[in-house]
Structures are given as structure tokens and as C-alpha cells.
Picture (cartoon, rainbow, N blue to C red):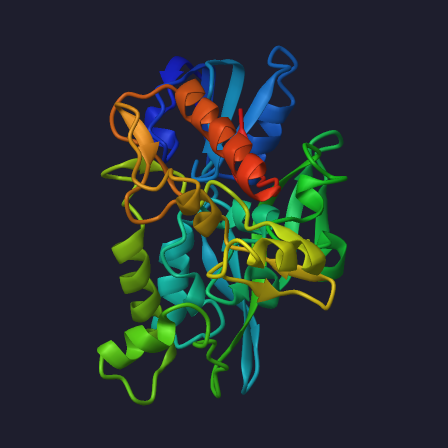
Length: 337
């Protein structure tokens, strides 16, 4: 373990923003993590995983701690289910593929989501009708103040839509070190009725899909819509899909007959933020070396050497415009640093 100085964070964030860390260290085991946390000469600390859900808007005048804890293991299993533990530094998509290759089902719809395992519960990542909470069993997290490990059950994580206890009352108090997932071994329950999965499976001429087929369909859909962060800097979906009242939705229907919707309850309806942004005229709009992706309006992109403040200002303009046209506030999904 070695602390480095004045390190560019460009390779460590999927937006490809060239912000610098005054100090930087990568930790690959729990002992090193505890040692780093005990360094009192670095009061300002930032934890970094896969860097996929953050927008760096300035240099970081402190210590960036890159969580690089690795390892995947089967904790327990029976005839029908298996509990798999993955450490925080494992790449999420590679972990999904590992599970699928072992015929463990439940997270195939979450294929190709960028980021690492350790940050997945914080965001309660989700896609195509499946959320992390659906397969989550527990996680271990290190309390920063006491440097003691605490196990969080599913109920203690208080999962919500792109939300968890780690974004609310426990924000900034813990760093997740590993996560346990409960997955199926046979009679997999496939979720294929959300989005374009069914159509993609038909295009693939798959009659009786397996978890491998669903994963391939999801990957194909995501690759057709979303830019590869290795080629174009982005953090995936920048905004959350807003939930509005049914009364508000019915009012919007009068002027926007084609507005899509996903009922949450009799009183609330989820509206796709991408549709709102596209209708507001931002889809594919370029502002020099940054802009909104041409295929998916939810994705803000860095085409070259854009600054984090450029993308932040664009996001604020989008929010302001959507609020003016639709009376809907859309919230950023990424963490602004």
C-alpha cells in the first residue's frame, strides 16, 4: 500500500473527467483500509469504487481511497438456492457473468450496469424490472468512526427506488466491504416483460429463454442505446425517473397524449425522465465536447476533455427546462463531487 500525490482521477471515473486528487491510495484488503482510516493527517477522505455513479466537478484536496477488495465465494447452498458473497472491488458486470456461467439466476437483468459490487447497494441499482434488493441478502460495512464491521440485513438497508440507508441516515458513515446475494439454482424466475426484452428475445429467435439468453438480450439492448464509457465518457443514466401524482399526470395527458407511464399506486405514477428530456429538445444536443447522447436522453456525455462543471451546468439547464414545460422536478442520480 502506497499513498501517491497529485494523481489524475481520469482513469477512475467513467465520465473521464481529469480532476486530480491531492493524495491517492488503493486498498486491496481490510487491514490496509483500517490503516488508511487511522491516518489523522488526512481528514478529508473520498471513497472511490468503479467511479460510475459520480461527476467530479473539481480537484479533491484530500485523500482518495480506491476500494479494490477482490473475491467471489459461495457461502451456502441447498437444492434450489445459493448464497454468493462478492467483495466490494469486484466489477459488477463481471460478477453477473460469473453468476450466469454458474447457472445462478436473479441478476441477469442487471447485466452490463457499470460500476463495482460495493456501490451497488448504495444506489439499489436496477434495470428492466429488477432491482438489487430483489436478490440482496446482506452486506458487511466498515464503520468509519469506530473501524468496526457491521452486517446490514435487507430490512436495515431500507431500500427504495435508487435509494438506501447508505444515501440517507447512514450516508458518509460506512464503506461497504462485501455483499451477499441469494440466487436461484434452478426453476429460475425470468423477468422478461419489461422494456424491449421480449422483442429482443424474439429477434434472437429464442423460444424458451434461459438466464443466459436474458442476459444476452439485456446486453444487446444496452449496447444499442448506451455509449461505452471506454469510448465516450458517461455515467449511464444521469437522472432518476420521477414519480408524480396521478392528478398531475392526468393534467399532462391533456397536452401530451403520448406520455408513457408506469403506475406505482392509485395515487402515484412513474414517468420516464428520458422521455421528458427528449420532449424538452435535449436528445442528441451537443455543446462542443459534451452534450446529451443521441440515442438515450438520460445519458449526459463527455466527448473529449469536458470539465465536470460543464456537465453539471448542462444537467441544471435540463432540470430547469423540464420543470418549466412539465412542472416536474427530475433529480440527478449521480453523486456530484
